[in-house]
Length: 128
Image 1 (tube, rainbow, N blue to C red):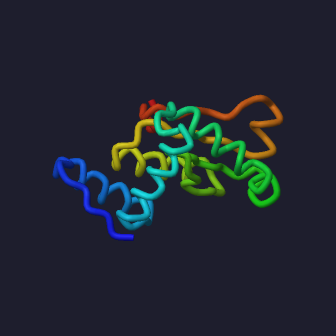
Image 2 (cartoon, rainbow, N blue to C red):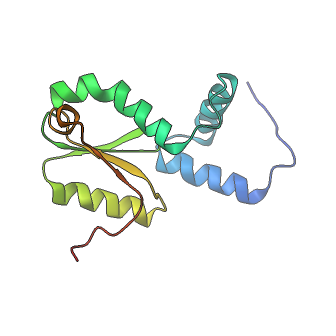
């Protein structure tokens, strides 16, 4: 259904298009997803809650398919599954280059059983 929206700042439209492209969505799909979140009352959710919810949702599959590997979750989405910590660190560096400042790094079947896992807050990824 066609929808015309007026009085939206050009900067917000530009940011919407860029983020939609980053997530592999069309602008229409991104707006539809935002509307769905808003209607469910979840439009304002802390980043950590979104990533924690994504981990809980993905956990059964990742325990089966990626046990012991390095999993990166950011923005409520699975970024990738990596065989080594170095590969996961490179993914986190790429997120930082894109402006992402928070992600979850976990090893299914290792960290979750030990009560571990980690939160990356955009800090240094290089050895001291």
